[in-house]
Image (cartoon, rainbow over all chains, first blue to last red; front, side):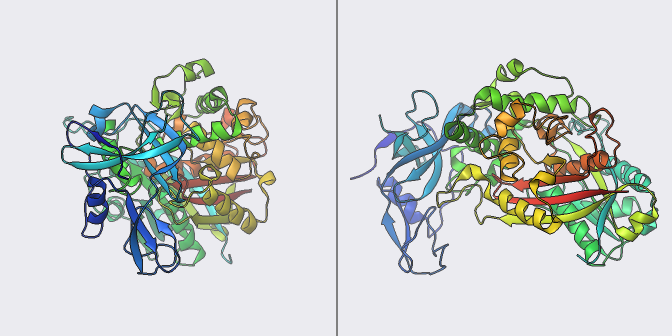
Length: 140
Length: 397
């Protein structure tokens, strides 16, 4: 199962850097997969992905798909935004607790009203012209 | 602590727009503004410049053109020191770290008198461009920043979560802003001194929902200088002073957001730092007479007051609405007007907290004087209170 892809006109306002290590994540995202790292020693997952385990510091990590769903912990609509993002304002960002017990913060889409605390959300790919970002979208 | 650290002098300029536009023919200059503070603070202390053994500066904003600002200031005022001269940096905690290091210089015996000081000029840079810079502090540059967060967007999400969990209302939160203005109206150092009503607060344009213009920090420039000394010197000056009785620090090992889901609005770092500071001072939260809390938004004051046990968990907004945390209330919080009304020149904001404690606890705060202010606390933070630094001060005569 691959992630839903939303085509976005234009370029990413502040594109992420890609390292030899993190390219696995960004390439995966381009292919519709939401990957991160898991520790082979203590089994803890990490996000963002890391080449070592931040918990037990083991270097024995492996890439594994994350369940691309979670629950909205909080959100806000931003009206005052950095100049880089001016053309996208206002926009909504949120904190989502993934079902794999990882907390992420990202754009939040699909909120009709209020702040959607407790709502279920899924990860989607934002396919900008210059590369991908991810976002969470509230499941109707 | 074998050497008792004290605060014997303080001075600051009113917060506001001090920095000149880049093309202005006449410029206001950081070192001129800060030099005046130093001279005034030392006069307030009653000490000569030869007594100074250490200088700990808040690192200036990147907009300050003069490089190596701390050593340049030593040159400006011809201050020679045997103990220490350094600049510190720790986001919003910067000014608190300056105080902490100056105190450490005295506690360790490296200096008898130490200055914690700094200047923060930034208002000539328009907010959208300034946010291009500060957004890079709000998470992982590659996995959070590309979504367009700003520091206060995190506080807004605190507010949403808090209202969800406690049932606190927008009106109750907004009362923190009303209270702050009421306090600031009585503070000559404050940037916004005109009282506001709760309806005016609620009617402001949204900045980061649900927070509007009057519930988020203004843009401010500022400069402040604190004079710390070992207690023998403080006693010799024959005037009231403040003794540093407790200190607590905690960094929760998370930058802006914990990837392991936690109770984000518990402000665990503040709770731990507060507990440690109270324990060292041998007090409990109930002994605190006034608190200057680093709170860039209404919600942050609520959450940190709860984490420091000044008000019960879930009651912080109601306490503000009921006047419990206002002047004349059970535990006055941010009698200076706080960050949202006194002003928020970030790298020196925590220094202003100590300026207010120095005024209050030496009973020189005029109309906003807290009666019998004997024990005061200052807190500062970075991130979403991912780290906190708390100091307990005691008034001595």
